[in-house]
Image (cartoon, rainbow, N blue to C red; front, side, top):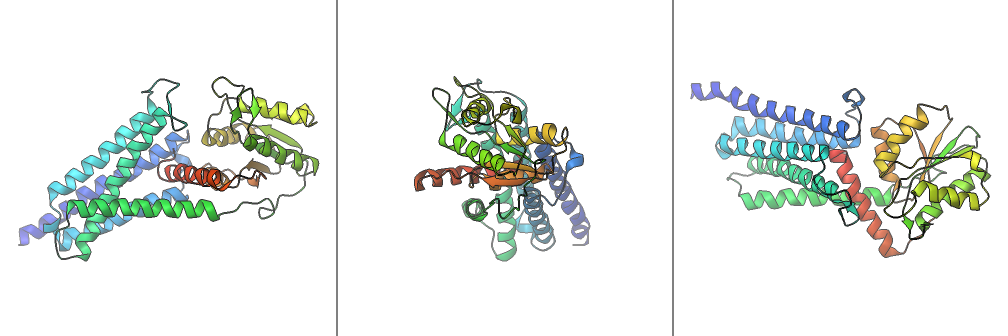
Amino acid sequence: MEMRNKNKPNKIVLPITALVLQMIFLFFIKYKNQGLSFSDFSLLQTGNLINFFMYLGIISGLVIVIKKKQDYLNKKTQTTLLILSWLFLIIGYISTQIKIFPENSYYFGQPADKILTGLLFLLFILSMLFFLSLIWTIIFTSHKPMFISSTLKSILILVVFFILTIIFVDNIGYTSGRWAIHRDQKNVAVVLGAAVWSGNIPSPTLSSRVDKVIDLLEEGFVGHIVLTGGKAPGELPESEVAFEYAKAKGIDPSLITTENITASTNDQIRWIKNNVTKKNSYAEIILISDAYHLPRVIEISKFYNLNIKVAESTHKMDFKDLLYNKIRESIALFNFWNFAL
């Protein structure tokens, strides 16, 4: 019995070390994905806190199990779960660094490489939630948990988390009034890109965002406009289509700057930080998008330590389209919180 107790510290230290190193590696991946250095790290970011508490739950539960109920979680099971989670995380990271599918491979409106990366990271998070549910089932019950039961619990945790993300997206409103935008010619408004329809026609989403920035300009809230968005297959870049739309509305072209290289919200916010905040001295930077999109815009901006204001366009959607976009945004926000994708 005495020899067994002496071995317990090793049984605790090794898996905890592996988990702590894995958490650090996950944080490294997140900042690497966004082109940021690890010196930009802050534990207080929403996604980082979610990751931290997940690992805290696993580590604290593991300590309790090893000390009190180690027979229910043998070394082989621990090692298998750690190896699987590390494997999914490493392969997921590799998929962010290489191109696997052809450039024009899209599914559900997303690049095939991005979908593959998302699935690999999803397997990683499921393996960690399985570990979490397995450990705490052992703590709160007097029998060895079943594989199927722990799998279902991990899926349930994932579903609940996703539902909470949808509620977050649906209930966080970022109106210009709430964010107290002030009239100042030293302010700049940045229109986030949106779809271009066939024939280089701005979609209602894009035109509504430009209409909003025109209102802000004419009402004296901003003195300069930035239009963002890269090229869609077969069409002009989103920013150029928005530029032509604004000119047709009578806006002085000298008040407009365009960029045409970004392909996602993450890209656009990174571009704003590197090309708007660092190279200019604007009083306020106001990002313009749809209400359902702004919660993710805010979260990504916080990740970049970017101080912004926001204003929502007046674009109205029917219930079906709005529900689709809120679900899509919730998936995107879930992926950003957990993996900075």
